[in-house]
Image 1 (tube, rainbow, N blue to C red):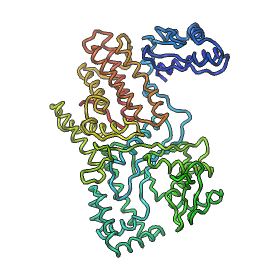
Image 2 (cartoon, rainbow, N blue to C red; image 1 turned 180 degrees about the vertical axis):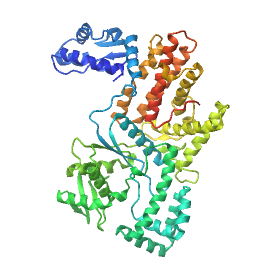
Image 3 (tube, rainbow, N blue to C red; image 1 turned 120 degrees about the vertical axis):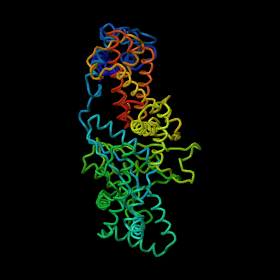
Image 4 (tube, helix red, strand yellow; image 1 turned 90 degrees about the horizontal axis):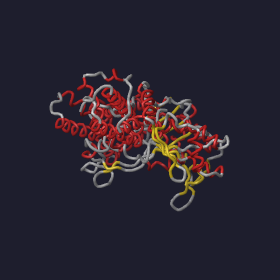
Amino acid sequence: MSDPISVLNERLHPVFAELAGGEPADPTVRPSDRADAQINGALALAKRVGSNPRELAQRMLDTGILDGIASDSEIAGPGFVNVTFAPDFLAGELARVAGDERLGVAAVDPALTVVVDYSAPNVAKEMHVGHLRSTVIGDCLVRILDFLGHDVIRENHIGDWGRPFGMLIEHLLDLGEDVAAEGLSQGDLDGFYKQANAKFSDDEEFQARSRERVVLLQSGDEETLVLWRRLVEMSNAYFNQVYTKLGVLLTDDDLAGESRYQPLMEGAYQRLDDAGLLHEDDGAMVVTVPGFVNRDGDPLPLIAQSRTGAFMYATSDLACVVDRVERLGADLMLYVIGTPQSQHLQMVFAVCKMAGWLAEPVEAVHVGFGNVLGDDRKILRSRSGDSVKLVDLLDEAIARADAAIQEKNPDMPAATRREVANMVGIGAVKYADLSTDRVKDYVFDFDRMLAFEGNTGPYCQYAHARINRIFDRAGVERASVRGATISIGEPEERSLALQILAFPTAVDVTMESYSPHKLCTYVYELAVAFSSFYDKCPILTSDEPVRTSRLALADLAGRTLARALDLLGIRAPEQM
């Protein structure tokens, strides 16, 4: 851990334990607006041991524990200790981080097997803006978990099963596979689905064929399964185009559609029955889940089997948990799904615990998120009232970024500009989404998200590009300064150093609540700290050894920016 506050907190633990008579005691070190850090633990400890907090704080200082760490320390108020870190201490921590490919972020031990359920578009339906949040939040969490050293299993729980597939397969046959494939490959999934649905509403003969086809599908008829697979494959090919454009890690190897769990539902249902958890309710078989009630205050059951004998969506979710725990060996399952599904998932998890399938230390967590809104603060829709296609939003973001870059840097070659526009446009969309507290709604605003000022993706990416430009102007390879001694003299150097060293803590805080916006805040504050350093501390015009020191500090800031952006799933351009 390279964060000076964490280093200080760790060093203080034995001292506070001694002050507590050998019992564990938390030093409680926090950032401070009056110094670099503030030690607050003496107040709580004084209550425990019946002592004066200022006296305890002084006894802590008298041990000399801050020697070599702090250049200044003072007891303030009822017993707070304000600490200013010594420049040599900060320089030493920077040197340690500069020589570490992980930039101070330790790999976890032990590693967990983590299943992340995210994205989940429906076969033969368009990926719309509603899929953006699950896809980019899930991708960010996957990247961080993988970086930390966990064994990460990505699962894209696509909607590839159910009654609609009867009409979809029949419509596929009516059109002809080649005609349907051409339309689906061009992204007209919504058109295909709407055509099938319209025929189902208006044509009784088509209705009959569709219902018969559902029976054939569910009974495992091979001809029907071949057609179903063809439909799934065509949809997945289009989804992959969107994933590639969006720059996320999902591939066909991560597909875990609803169809995978159909054969497992009977077993899950039987195990519920064997455990005595099922009972009849108005003809359906349900599990009563303590603590869940409907609007009238009556118990709200989880329906496992309908009165017609059909297994329910909840049964599939139960089978899914069993599979992930017992076959995949999951220690942690993250469900990156919108907040409207919160109650359903909490009930599923509760039933799994009742059945003994989800026992400590195994954990299932709903990583919920809010909606993407339009200017009217309603769910973002097209002018026709339809859901906005995700690919259309991405294409527009790239086009707008291209225009902005051309205006900002008209001499950039067209091919380079197109590549950078892709990075900036996609990065702007991702950053706008991830920088919003995931549980909140946010307004989709191209002008704001593509701005080069403020808490935006382009601003953070520009900081990285600016660092590259410094080295281009200096005619110096970045790697050549990585062993140089970094000296901390000016306030802006200190602020940038502290921000760089806070990277491990930013990662930890992000994963405590699975909240990517906290990492975005860190990236923005790092970009701001670098901008202040760049404006106030001359680099190329300084004499040695200051020049090389500042180049080394700029390089380390750039490496940290690039790594943090990568964890967000955002590329760091070398020029803009």
